[in-house]
Image 1 (cartoon, rainbow, N blue to C red):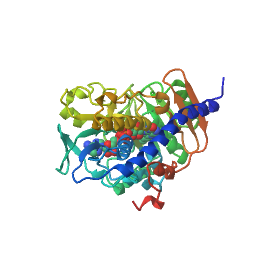
Image 2: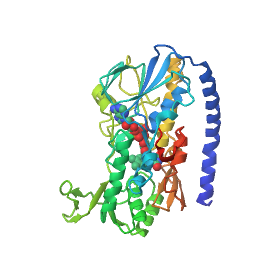
Image 3: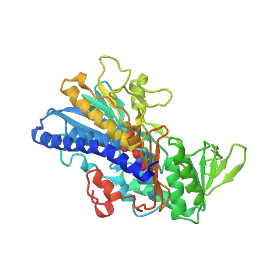
Image 4: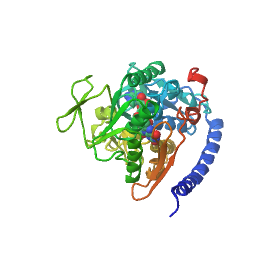
Length: 420
Ligand SMILES: Cc1cc2nc3c(=O)[nH]c(=O)nc-3n(C[C@H](O)[C@H](O)[C@H](O)COP(=O)(O)OP(=O)(O)OC[C@H]3O[C@@H](n4cnc5c(N)ncnc54)[C@H](O)[C@@H]3O)c2cc1C
């Protein structure tokens, strides 16, 4: 049997080679596009609702490929991209908050003039040919993509839409943790685990309890990661309670009631459970296109909405809000964005028979880098079956490598992240 480090290396190599080839071709096409695209006075709109991992990538790709006569309009309620991967860490450690909010200027940095418009607003309604914004503005569309993701309680997701207030939300989370002696983290998914281990490793004096409704943590991953992570958590003296779904006795009371009726008090309860898909816009407009079970938007293999009817407009959905069968991870949204960008361009070119199909690559899209506190973590890859590669690491940068992350979104990290 090969050691996991070598298996990981082989896996990265296997994925990276075709990926690199594709990137080179895309760069050449983008350069050609930059010279050939011509801005015109009233272009048709290709509207994207939601500018996080999936929507950002789709906007960027369309800026590099839409033909003359069309432009991308991204409608996003947040002033900056919320880099949620860092939220658990930045809810515990202070000084880095600003870095978690990335300017959108990277989307069209190298795009031709006139191809991109960012609208900071909330879409409140969709019709057959336009989206209606909270400001009252109506924005006509020729093609529409829903990339509205999911909602979750803070600090997993934040409610503030402007950077300054969003930073304050993270600072409030830090103060709450600082002021509490006993902390219950409810939810044994990746977010709950990162939260609990960050609190305990940066603030070892705190009494931390992790509570999970199932008998095993990390239900979306395989048994090897589950038992490795559980071992690491227990080694850090975090109390673990499994198979319990406690109720908060009274709002703000800090008291949890467990299945046997017993209650426990905590200075702070952090809930890292329950993602709700933001599918309400489609629910109001085309309820038959939303799954009754999962509340996610139903899509066909080309990622177009299902059950819209033959005369329906061109509407797509990507990322966590879409029922694609893919892992709910940032990378899956990226891959889906590539398919939708290509399909929109093919439809504009009058090639409806050449549309790309999205097939989830679980190994690539579900690969995860899970931190287990200040100085530990694990890289994990699975095919959803028996194949599991697990490589622990013991160097985690305190700022979650935020400078490099900004670069990935096409922006130079400015000191203090204050200039944009
Ligand atoms: C704390 C945390 C840590 C995570 N860590 C990882 C990780 O390490 N690796 C990984 O791969 N995945 C991770 N994930 C999962 C990953 O973040 C999600 O899969 C990803 O964010 C999904 O991207 P999305 O674009 O589909 O939607 P979301 O990120 O949910 O974003 C949706 C966007 O749409 C906007 N929006 C919604 N409704 C409207 C509207 N009506 N009008 C205008 N704008 C709207 C929102 O403001 C938001 O910007 C993590 C998730 C959390 C919460």
